[in-house]
Length: 222
Image 1 (cartoon, one colour):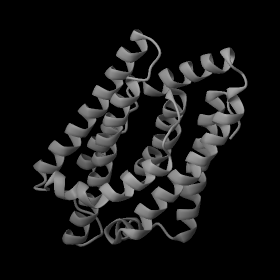
Image 2 (cartoon, helix red, strand yellow; image 1 turned 180 degrees about the horizontal axis):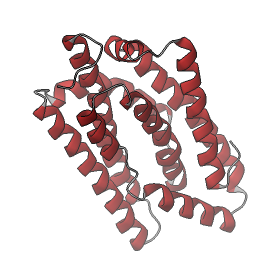
Image 3 (tube, helix red, strand yellow; image 1 turned 45 degrees about the horizontal axis):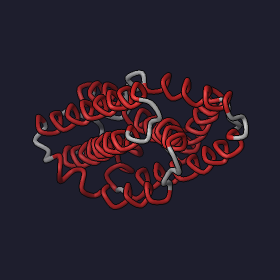
Image 4 (cartoon, helix red, strand yellow; image 1 turned 120 degrees about the vertical axis):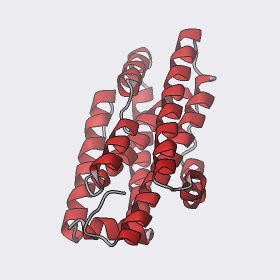
């Protein structure tokens, strides 16, 4: 495994947590995307959603394979995050296809931004695998186009989706903070990489700014 300023066992625990949470996020994204595809209003949109779901699954398998290469059991690494993810998705259950798309773009976007930040504290091999898994695979452009088209058809949906986006931001930031603070190994990785409380604050400010840019691209007020 790659080396950092952390002791070997601390670094291994941190990488296990990081890859575990990211892999489980990709696996649940695949499942949600596949389910959401059934709500798409046309066959072509169903097919596109299914293609995006497949891309999420491929990213999951890449992370799982990398964990096995490092001698990490993927299922054991993901297990600590099953309950927190279930709680998050229960709190942010979309009401319809459009809300599901906004959740995938805004909610997942905040999570992926957080993992990109943390990826700077791991070695190059793991960072490369993470960056491949965090690639949006054209998903962002698809969601932006669909949501903007929907708003042109029904401008009254703007306020509802804007409120939904703000709710997702709060829930996703809370989820990221829980991962950063409640998992000892992840905290050790951030602190060992030189991230103090001030830098943690700046990181979450960057996450908020990225969220605002996403909302603007959707044509919604942040």
